[in-house]
Image 1 (cartoon, rainbow, N blue to C red):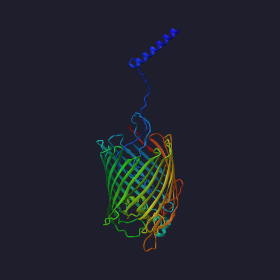
Image 2: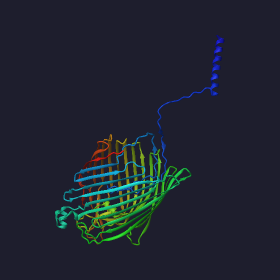
Image 3: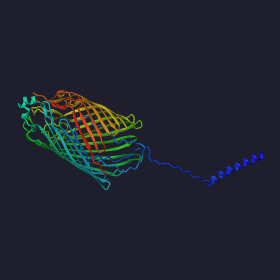
Image 4: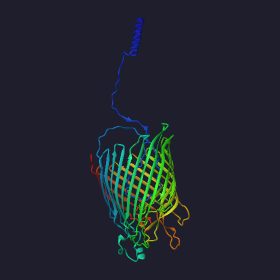
Length: 593
């Protein structure tokens, strides 16, 4: 038995050594193949790209104008985001909805129409048309008709030449009209000795026509160490029913160059140039109802030139924009020999902390803009027709901003801003009109402190909640008989919610609060005309809602509701609003392959 055990052990040892030797000599080889479905995945990586960002000024301003008293939000230079893992799925081209027709009608005899059509999918060109209309034809108790209307049509197109050059243009026409309805029947009788049926609406009607043409050309060069450029031309002509006219030509552009710093840091250098020219003609025609003075026509021309060199770059986790804006003011002088040059900072720095969840930004910026007739009448549609533009607004802005991403669904923003405003525009009741229903723009120097915060919650695009508000403090610079800035509230607040239920029902609810305001007028009985505040305009509490039902991808129905608190509020002295507004309608599109 002992002999048998020794023989068995020797046999096992020889077999083991033989197997090992065979593997070392390559005599033994075996392939293992694992079969399964392949899932190509883009792993989570940090997105790093440094395209030459070119501002295209050809974007058309849609005709939903509102006067915002909030300062401009700080926009970070460059905020790389993390790319989530995603499957690569080849999908066939889907149907395109390149058109829609929206029709609606509301109380106060309010028709709504919006038509949009564009070309279908094309790598080289895009073109289309948009037509829109909104008006109201009702009246207010004791104030008579308060008609208004906005109608516009725009043709647009874009074409890419040789994959490196983009040409774009749009041609538009807009017509606006409203009434200087800010007087009651009793005031009309007391001042002019006539009843409402003794005057014509044409006697106190305001009407403007605006024709615009924009042309843009830019190369699509995104490679570093190569020169890029853009050129934009804007031409517009505004004329009104009383003979006022304003022609504006704006030519601007930039050249930019991407570069590397020690093959580790990247940046882009810009040089922006802009020339803004105005030709104005004030009327000598018949003026609106209640005009007391003698109108003498006038004309003038003015120019503003801007030169803005700056550099965008990232260095050691900090994002910088460093530059300077030089502005030459030949607009305020109105052709006289007094022309001035101003210098404005153009510096922004941003830093990401806490794994990119917290972004802190500081900025010192400024600028110069013309207070043109077109810009003034969009802020206050009841200005005097003989206001052919005023002076150039100068502003120096210092802003600190923080954005904190608390989770994937919750984000908070906070901002503190301080602005030095020179030749700021305020509005006062014009003493040349006996009915007290026309406003005269005036210049004032002031400083503004703004503190604001917002918080938003997004839950998988089904539910969105937003809440926020701002506090404003104005300090009038120099001697003034005004105790408060006219038509500027001390605070505002917002609470809004959006609900998307299975892409079938869309709900929007919004509540806004606007603190009380005061107006202004010229002090009567004074040898030197001075401004004083008028009575307090009450706080505005607005509630708006919208409901949309999508029957299918081509047909939907909507109901819009505004001022659901049914408040009679005032934005301007003597101009009350309507109460609740309701518009119902439908949207229809024709699908294309």
